[in-house]
Length: 287
Image (tube, rainbow, N blue to C red; front, side, top):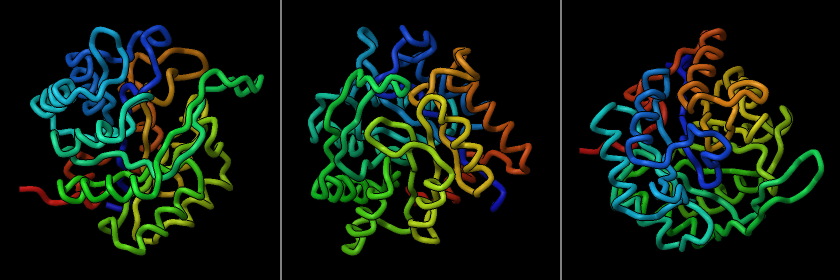
């Protein structure tokens, strides 16, 4: 399956709003329909940041998260990746609680504390920022919960130093190998996209590890094209990027999935099915 590419669709995130793109899902029904469309267009994984259906704000509510996950599972076989970032103001305990509650196939494991901001990159104006806390002890605790619940950690790395932190912690065998990394480009406070940086990050992880990329805003499609060429896997979606081309709003994360699936096929890489992705990403075997 060397030519297969795993496509993840990140549907909402913590910050994107319907005011920016009306296709950002808030309700359970919107999440389910969007996940099904992403699956039909080539996605093998869907990444979930649940929202309060009334306010559209990120929520750690287990009932809301469970309803979304169960609804998606009832409609299609797409793999579920649940966020442990959730949103600003959510406690450390609330961030990890959904893992034991819904036992997703994968979950994000953020690997380092950092300045995390929304910014106008042209003017340099910082629009919103906070300290995104992910201490070594917290990473170890989250990894333990994921291992106990047979959930594959997706190691979110916003800088090459985050990879080095993972490798340091792994000396204590906190993660089952082979590991799976997500290289995130374009967040203000993290690394920006250049081919040199992607190559350096790829060369910093163990040879047997799997990896994918995602890029914020205009980084999204260039980053993923590079990953296709280099043998990595892909992430798109309205969490990362509101547009399909230029300033044309995407009709949904599914439209971005269809675009990168086409890009991959042009380079003789076929989108993986969920069953194939389970093997490629070395997911734990559950009963």
